Image 1: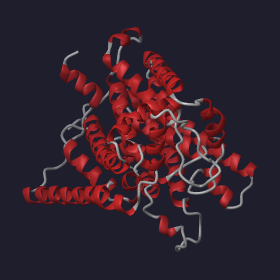
Image 2 (image 1 turned 60 degrees about the vertical axis):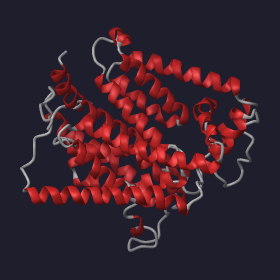
Image 3 (image 1 turned 90 degrees about the horizontal axis):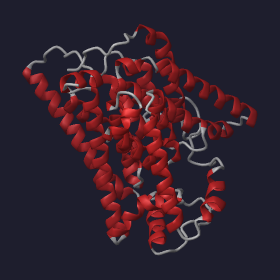
Image 4 (image 1 turned 90 degrees about the vertical axis):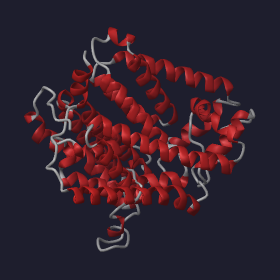
Length: 417
């Protein structure tokens, strides 16, 4: 297939906006650059000094235990201290951190790599969605998300691995949307192996990334699933064989992970429990949210014919909302994986053009938390505002899909600018 046709098929196009006066364009560009640079300085140089790297400490010490043959899962999980929550396979993936020698060096290397990963993920997302406006869209994303309370600033401040996982997710979508043709022929495509390995990498670190399975399943890319399963099994097996006392992961950590955390948790069960609702009401609310997520995924399905990248990012946004809201743990920096969905605002026929979705994202980013925590709307749990935002994400996607999805043409339109 010629490159031009491949480009049109997978990327679509965006109708160009009316030309701005030269002075207006220059001013807008300067404003974007200023906000982006200030945001990066704030996130990378200022925020880390306000925290000692709470999330990085257990990772660093677990890696040290792993490479020195000391049992990794020997922590006291009854305390409220941050814990190492990863599987034996993740020990293999994270082991290279030990080469930095000291905690401080490793943390600053992690901070720099996280910032680069997030910016690169934004750039790749922008290129997937639009060619002409890729640079300003990337700058806009950096300006917004590096200045918002969540998720980039907190990810870098606490120094966790969410930035890397954002890049893995975006690269996975890039490989998946470029993969086409009969399933058997996909074994001859490099994208099959790239997508499969990336999926295995993400699920190894955070099992919640199992939602990535939806993309190859719905696109009938079962070779990707086979590669992912093999890569995941290989990482887990290697980790199990090289970790001291690996059975402690199953005996000690897995039971701890199965218990919903009662603090710093925006999951629906945790918030409703703080508000005094009983188990029956909590279960009913979770089932309702999961039903809405299912409707959203089904309603978005037709969008894949028109715009695979936007469809993938929006579908994953709905699924992540279901996993985190209906699961046992939801933290503010999990909004990291809604960034690609938010960038689909550049697509003229997508759900991100709805103001209701902007409100939902603003809530997930912690931008209106003050209204709910001892604010004008009363005293609610700290995570109430972000939880409402996460619940609204699949609701808005479902409503948009049901109202607009049927009007979407089946063929991919030439809308790329």
